[in-house]
Amino acid sequence: MAEALPDFPDSDFSDEELSPLEISFNKAADHVRKLTSSLDNNQLLELYGLYKQGTEGKCNVPKPGWLDGRGRRKWEAWRSLGDLPSDEAKQKYIALVQKYAPELTDLSTEKELGVKETWIAVSSMRKFPEPELIHNELSILDAARENCAERVTQLLAEHPELRHEKDDDGLTALHWATDRNATKALQAALDGGCPVDAADECGQTALHYAASCGHVESTRILLKAGASLLKDEDDCTPLDLAADDEIRKILEGAT
Image (cartoon, rainbow, N blue to C red):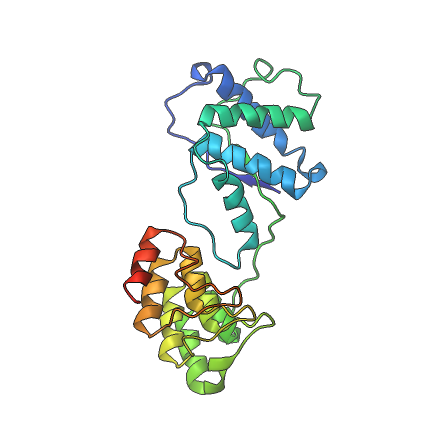
């Protein structure tokens, strides 16, 4: 599905000041919206990665949460390009769009498009709006995921047995809160007695999730609550899965 990028209303650049490469890149990106229904997810992901590399350079954002499969695949497509120069990424993007749309015989002079337009990036999956949340109807797992700390506290006070509630994949309120870095809900779940070392079906605890997702604050909260560096079914501890040096140092300080 096409995903809009912000335009630049305060830009000082006119269409005439754009380079031929930028004009071609913008026109290619504008055409992608017509192609999304005919491309598979891998093709869309490749385009997405090149687009991000071309417009923003090397990937410098945290890896999305463990449960955000769509976001992680998009992030990995971008991250995989490493230090590829932005101009080279734009050239590769243009070539790829022309491969998928041979009718685009001239991307440099036909109908120039400027930076004040709203360009598109390609997402790997169609994204549907989430349903409106009704606070007093949220389950313990939903409340944890949405960072509704008051609802988490209320449910655990009224139904202490929910401390051990799991979904079909073995995820507890702690797993959900940690994956989303929902720190208020995470603290509320811990305060309500949720077992800090509860494991999912793969043997991973909330600390595994915090470490692999690079969530610094959640990592610290879990360690303060007494989380252990347990091994999962693949014999990996949270330290083995640490997403970056900062997480690694925090975990090493707990050993």
